Image (cartoon, rainbow, N blue to C red; front, side):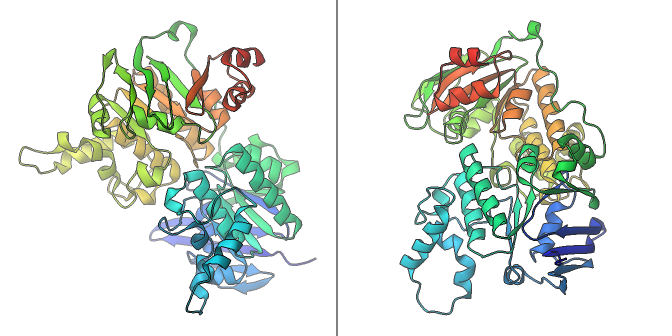
Length: 508
């Protein structure tokens, strides 16, 4: 029997008094696609960072091809043929796609001049396997989904033997995801081993050979995909039964509430046009459609993050003059970005500072000094209401798991007592347990009278959580689906332009 390409034995990792990993074992065979599952904070990313040389273990050993190795840095990992694609984008925004893809090779070269023509030719050859992205473009000019593809393409240039993919499809379209899966299967056929971290069970069960589960920094089990079900994986991840992933929807008697928010023929002259809809009291309104269809731009146009050239936004029947985001916040409309770490929270700041940042005016005394006691009380209140798992409100947000970071981002919006919350991809990169908690919170907020609009690329979330769904295509509302009409087929028909709303309903 050949030695495993990678094996982990008894690895423990301390961060001060906190144990992120405890006596963990993990084995990766040659040519295997091995899923690693666990709730946020289970230790998955910590172990991957140890394998990739970003972190050093406190105890335990790592073997590559049966030989004990010390992976002292990312460069040392790359020299062993180990590549890591982080969940969070880690690109240089002011450099081109080609420069980002070959940055590691460029740093190692000794020649005084760069052959940009060869660099761009080689980069384009790799990128064309994934998507039609011009490698001469600056990364800053690309949408999030394209930046994620650049991260993956960068890893493919490293000639890896072990490739670690951490939530690689979180920002990808269905087409891009299929292309990535084809590449993963091709890599597997060529003997490359892949560690695949994802919360999406459908992906794991269609792509992977084995699945290992972590919980609370400890190894739980490893099984062949053929011997286990998605429900088994979820139970082992959370250590408990999750009997209802989505809260109950509005009843028939509650579905015709008065409008809270109305958009009347709004447009920006470029990305969205003639958009009209209403958001009713007590409901969660979903907005679906393909990435790039204009969903996010509509939300940004409503809350002043994008200039509108036409139309009216009304709140409780009163027309609003919203020219900047500060106007929206003052009116009671807040927006939670899809880019949680880029725009949703301040990672280096404390939990208390993040929660209070939009409400500083009410926490400041007449001479302009912040009332720290009031700030702490505000933060404690919302952290308790949203069940944020933390060491204390003075802990930096970067110390929290993804699900708890998302709760802090939501608490920041709630602190200004909003009338409407627009949430873009509210559970991206969050484990199934945290998703259930976020969904429950959104339903409670809707029932309390706050208007909730959810933009989501995850079809189960869109259909399971929302009371109505608007489908956007090419910057326009392609159709509306009621609770009895919502199916994946109906949404896809509208999103792809195959049928009208009525046709989609019949298809349902």
